[in-house]
Amino acid sequence: MEALPKLSPAQSLLLRTAARRDDGRVIPPDTLRGGARVKVLTALLLRGWIEPAADGDHLLTDAGYVAIGQQRPVPLDDVQPMDTTDDLQLLEGISVRPGTKLAALVMALRRPQGATSLQLILATGWQPHTVRGAISGMLRKKLGLNVVLAHNDSGERVYRVV
Image 1 (spheres, rainbow, N blue to C red):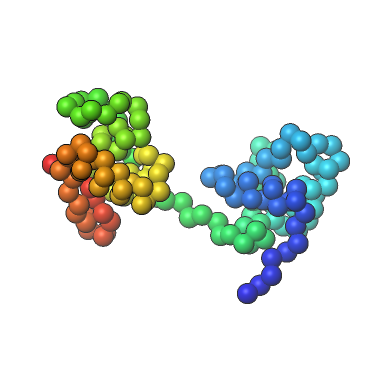
Image 2 (image 1 turned 60 degrees about the vertical axis):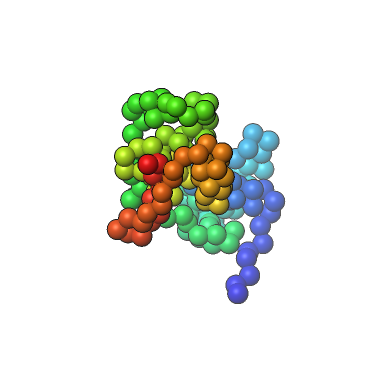
């Protein structure tokens, strides 16, 4: 196992927060001002962990991800967005407040094509085990919905209310 490079607390903070962002932008906090900001950004640039962007910001490089022991996230190109037409119609007859994560779960499952696990995770912001638990506990047991599980051609779980 390769040892991670020694980082100052400010460098570590900048790299880790940039790694959590989808676009990998490095945004120094307002508390890091003046010479300290210049020194930290210069050190990260010299090591090749960040690179300047066209809009004046800086972006995290692959070497920057390696410096904090992470890998650059792979973009999800095959995720199909779900349409939001007639959402309130999909909630008719179910005692769930509109606008909640549980309502988003029910609306996704009541669509004719159903929803994959990944679509449900993205719609609610929940972890996979929380989505499965909500389907099993809240929807099936408490609300009495008949949720069926199938697998599509690529092997993904597809849930649907019948």
